[in-house]
Length: 568
Image (cartoon, rainbow, N blue to C red):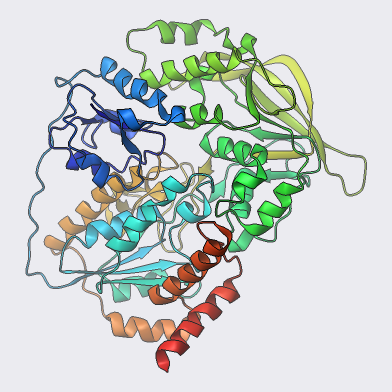
């Protein structure tokens, strides 16, 4: 019997190093790791030891005889990967790490951000006993997009925070939540109190469509909607027009699929999750019956991953609709599919889309409709004042050879109008400039060489590093950040051991005094633990994982009351 990796796979590769027979691939050392949708276990090589199960931070690995019905397909998906990547000729063996140089004193590092990229970096740093880490986050809560981005109906993905909580629960690590760099502290302040600073601030800016009507009420970035239903304090007071029967999402990546799922799920099922209370109430009153996702290219080039696409087919009361005509692939896509070099993930995308196109819709069900080879050209509004979204025009595309060697979408002269009162754009993200640090406006990242921040001339900026999306752009899943952080931290350790990092002029005590002056309402690790306990306690009463607080003032009050109890 073999073990099987399933939909919840986070790609952090903890299972790879735990496997005694190296049967989990691609590993971080292999080229495919940078683009893989998930990891795979070779069924013939697996020795049924279960080490990978214990190492998996998101409970994504099961014995093949314990797969539930929705997960049965993953036995085939794991095996298919090894048809394309047979053992062992194409694989690079795992290599041991070089032991660190010691006796250099205590290395002090500041990390800006508290999402997965930041936490993996802290975890990697704290493997050494001569390191102290201060983590700064402008929100009153940690975990970044795991808390504010992962869909509430994916609780397994969120369990990675339990690993972070355990890894960061040591005296050498300090949380400084509700502290904004650029407001309460500056870049120079961080370097004055640390040998190095790692920016792990993600890519929080949404890309715009650049079409008329994009700014009309009823047209939003999908990330605003995601933050709203996940209880992000900055978005808790947003409103979205759910009065119409159709919503349109521009884009078909995993975020778009998350939004489509939340809009069509049974609210009673959502009520078992940690979705924000205000969002649950609004969704109970929603009239949305159909969600249309627009993809500018074909099913073979769709941005979603196969596990997320496949899972839509198991939503109760929801049909996934693909027009059979959309499965008449263009010559280039068909040639790619027929090629011996086609990646299994691409072949699976087309196979799943074709399966959905052959299903008969159930009368009365809600619908998630995938439209391929279309792009919006204009969002139009009502005649009322103020105007609101009432529809959008789309143009049919054709695929042509792109400048990068891939296939690009080119508009034709065929257009169509879709009635809707809600348009959500989900077409990608880019980083924002970090004060005091170079920024590449074209790519939307901080320029770097394997994590070392570099100046325009190519020289490294001493003591300044990046990891996560601000380093590499918005690509990969949660676990991808582990390998990314490991690379960055390796560069930082190299510089420390080579004595290239200037010693800080002040230490932890001085930093504490400065923070007390600049931001007396900072939230510490113990404050966060009190907030976490209150949220979980409220959730237990309602049979939910937690009931999220969305008011920063309330969170600060909970932390202060905890301090008062300890002071008595």
